[in-house]
Image 1 (cartoon, rainbow, N blue to C red):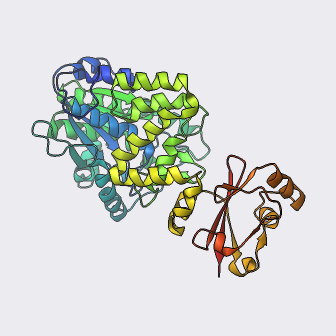
Image 2: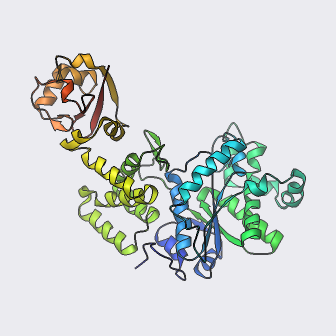
Image 3: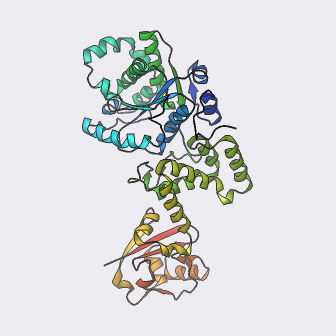
Length: 434
């Protein structure tokens, strides 16, 4: 039985753990032996283009956390230097360049988000966060071209997949981004010199940059370095992982609330649920195998999705935020929704279409059929009548069967909000104003 990650399991084979969890997309020769043997230092870079990481960053974060739990020393490199340039990998257009002040601001937020996953006080293998601006910003151009640039041929750089894709685009690639590969390679060299770092991990789109760094260490230090790349996570429906109709799912609760974060995982499709358990939780193999059996037996219970949402929300936001998210989720389709205050309702239904209507319009009562037409849940009063008679209309999660029903402000949640629902999923929020 594999460990759940509650403690250090030094001596165990973290590479085998990565393989079982489906986290190895490609690795350099010798990487397996390096990670299966003695303690190593490994780094992963994080892009500081925003003050928060998003769920697309969770796989590399979990990779560092697993490395540490298996006795290795993790380094999170926050690209305060390379962030000023922009990585062309996985991009079809050039990134917007950051100022030094923007990069520093973003670094502060990222550091705080890594803290729940990594132990910076571990006695034998503490995690580190370093900023590559420390060595990139002071470097002068002549020294870089003389000492580093001469070890790279333009031919080899043009052959990198990330560069080739950009050259195929009409906009091409700027010299600024073209130089990114050299800068990331130099990062690896500096980490090798300062911390004895011999392994770099990253997304599969980083393969070219990582192997270039391995080559640079071999050329300049006569040492062997290794690279392991993780799969780029996508949903089985082909949607880019971490993207929703409301936008990016952030780790910062000020950008994506704990409730929406919880709901994102709760809405995971059946085919993605078990792989995500392997990627994003510390649940052990036996537990995940049993949850997989439960999914096959009774997928309608969504037990796996609830466990997935619970584990990841707890990791990222803590127990208190998880409790709030579960309470709100439990009320979502129950009549007890009226127990929520207006702010909680607006949070729970933040992604639902909404309409503002003057409070005075409900003074003598507004016919439900009229309200359904106003909110486009019905195309006409005739259709609204049929929907109500068939039992397909809910107000504040209570089925309304009387087509003559009228709503007054007092029937709203705190006299300010109505939650309308047509069938199982078509919802609309009505806000009373004035």
